[in-house]
Image 1 (cartoon, rainbow, N blue to C red):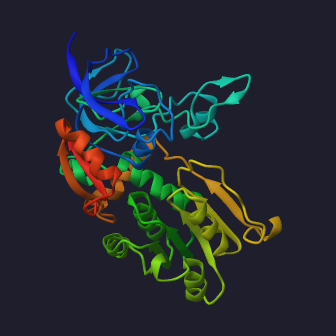
Image 2: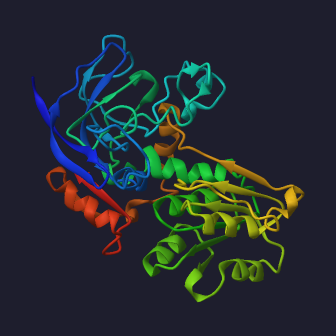
Image 3: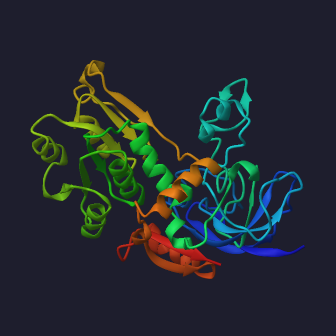
Length: 357
């Protein structure tokens, strides 16, 4: 049986490069040969054991590649075609999908639905930090890539760009809004770009890493706040003349950033949460206005599916957003353990790494 290289979760603290059989293709599947992928912050949660997955699973959920083989029931595509698939791969026919929540795709049980069921790559099925990945429900999830777009230009579309933009979309950003983004990692930076596209006219980015603050300015932040130079809540309230912000996007997943995002909202404002939390959250009474502030707290899981990917590819092709600057380091798949070490310890100004078999 033909084999391939893959980054495999062994146990908390260990993701290693090993070999696996190349997957067989079912009728509704497609086998994608990976040309570029990357490592996500969620993969680091998996590595640390903060998010549980099965031992032996191939990690990764951000694939760019070429169709190697198509299932017999997949129409509208051809082998050899260059494509991407979203990190979320909805079936298109579950109850969640038909309710408009494809990210929460998955079968119902007598106990209800399993949250995040649409996230399959590197979670419930083998992912794409490998030479090949099997794409389920391929007709619903593959999106062709136009000639002239490089892998690195579109590498953020499957997850980081889709997630960051969702923070602005779910938050209901409107023309003329004031928006703050807490934490300017890759998702937060994409949230900045998404808020600008949606019409926010004052965008505040909060971080302390000079390189990230600089990239935020390039992507649309009007003001950057260094949280090490003073209480960010006080700084933001001063910047808004005490009014607060219309939308606060939390892009880190900590109690501190969540609480700060809540405290800077105007009455009736929205906290749009993108962070992956590894501990229970607490909502302080005063920050929540005792439950009487008309505020909204909304969460988002990266929207997926071919239509979402088509739209994001169009944004990149239009030139309205250029995310190439987010790729700061490049590794071969053979060196992915080194890439995990660099990315996991956030050394050398890393934002995102490009992994190429």
